[in-house]
Image (cartoon, rainbow, N blue to C red):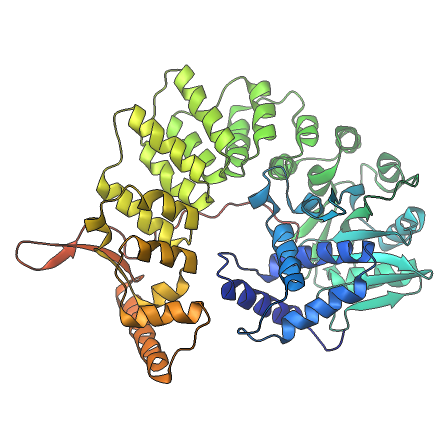
Length: 531
């Protein structure tokens, strides 16, 4: 790389890029490793490793008002795809996020997946037996980080987003494993002294056009060699936080026979964490193997809830076939979870289930904020249509509430959905502070403006800044002062800067409806992350 680049720089510049292009997503340290490593793998397989680092350098050096070439746009788009794969495809997770990327219009796939917590010397043997080829690359993850490992000229090359040098070379398996254990993943012996087990999950990615036969080690044979009843439940502990358990990580990527092999050896699914991981990572085969004949209602409640919240339709179908019914006392709990998952097909299944069983729908409106947070307009439409069918249509007050909710969450398509059915006289009562305007996606602001929502001169100056037009110094200072005032209001009065008022006969403006000054957050989707 042409300059030293650390991860915080990359995150900052990528987020500035996303803000510049008014994209309603942001990156953090926890997830960006997976995104960068997976995109790196794609570029290496295409023979474009040098170009990967050139693009990364360009992103780090660029200013917020720089013109972005299309190649950089595609690069960042690929990183976003692998950071949030489930947002684009409910069948994907970070474990198989490489499938979101393509080479020659063919998706990348993992040809070999393996997870274990074991001694360094065993990992050295594993890599030696794996015998990585020069036309393939391994994505290697620990508890909260990911790197890429490949071989070239009989040396191991590691790409770690934390390396300022980009990559490092290692002569043999011993050097490689020592680097991964102590410097990359930071495992210790439980007393914060270097040592202990090394827990890693590896996925070998090959070029999709590579049809050469390749014999990978048998996963069950590797477990037979390195695991016994005495050590199978041991965990690796990382300085960076978290522990690595073999069964829990195998549940994310392994087939049923692998899971059965681990269970037969004495692996314990403590607190059903492995089953939960199988749900979150859409691994139906592993889930069935882990559950066996267990049909405990409380456990199935948790698993169904997790499947619904993460939009995992295949997992839901598998659980339903095993249990034969939804183990919820009321419809609202299941419907709210399905709405949060953002999978409209799955939400429809849940709603139809309660229709067939004549359970009825209680507090259906409570699920709409969850659907808004998911970004699925289809989920919102399903809920609204059911309310209409039940003779409980949304009134203007509720539509305004959900519109403001959508604005605050930067849900552009959701804003468009609610805008079209709200009378113009109500839309004219919407107020947005300068700070709120700055936080809001430009496309949303233009929609609101087209529907007659009023904006102050200072807010319009923010519009121009978002559109990269020249804004005079006086207006820039005015925007700054308005933002400072907004900051004080938010600090002192818990005022988020988005309101809706109506004029009373007395001439005093009062709230059009009782709406929280700050968005009552719909809890974030709790999906255990690999990275």
